[in-house]
Amino acid sequence: MTKNSLSALGTSVPRPSAEPAATMQAAVFTAARTVRIEKVPMPQPGPGQVRVRLQGCGVCASNLGPWLGGPWQHYPLAPGAPGHEGWGVIDALGENVREHAIGQRVAVLSQNAYAQYDIAPAAAALPLPPELDDHPFAGEPLGCAMNIFQRSRIAPGQDVAVIGIGFLGALLTRLCVQQGARVIAVSRRDFALETARQSGAHLRLCSEDPSVAARIMEWTGGRGCERVIEAVGMQWALDLAAEITAVRGRLVIAGYHQDGPRQVNMQQWNWRGIDVINAHERDADIYLQGIAAAIRAVCEGRIDPAPLYTHRFSLPELADAFHTLEKRPEGFLKAWITP
Ligand SMILES: [Zn+2]
Image (cartoon, rainbow, N blue to C red):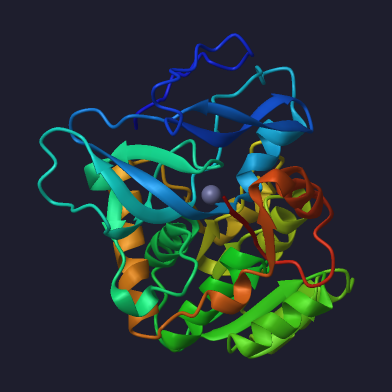
């Protein structure tokens, strides 16, 4: 990925007066829970890159780390960082870019998309077909769902539990149901359980019900689930997952566990001989394959992310979007930003 090392964060930036249009607005994270909208130089695509005039960018739960801060976090971030779920229209091509044309609408895997424009390698800009013209399309989380689903290896007839029904959990519920699995959705929020029902979940349970594990064991005839997808990113979800994974089952960790060490019940993992998959993807090529698969899945109607984008904010309201993400109020699944 191209890092846009704009050092022009202060007020002493020389502005070329001959080209007043060569600036854009971008969000700059300057401290924990502090973001400013600044006028910064327009990024220019280098060889093999494209520039995208962004139409939107999803707000990712993994951005909570940079938002909340911590001893490892250094500010300011680059303008537009850490927005990585953008989509928009290509408005400039770098040298040697043959596979794209100006005006093409794309989902883009980039790093600085909390802004009006961002640049990315041409290969990281995936064309969106015209039937998706009116839809937001946050490529990275949709690709993530497709890749997690693939690594879960769901077969028809399997009992599958999805723990945590957010944007990702709702998409995974739908994909597993379509694969012919019997799906149990677990969430603490009524709204999310209703979303799971609409996604086809066969059984919906509140995670705060102390008998949730017992009810899942009963529903599966005492065997537990052949597949458990943990999509929360917290200790309690790992604990529950360990309790309900069947012997030789597969526990797929889709949650984001990046706020410190976790404990796992190794005695239980070991006794049941389960496979544990860490399904977060780091390989950019695999990410792009996932996004391409998501574009096909949306076009074919296999997934419908539209109702899952529940909260929309403008770029100057980015801080509000993060406050909302922190609180996850009733009705919240995913926020997105319009530049
Ligand atoms: Zn993301």
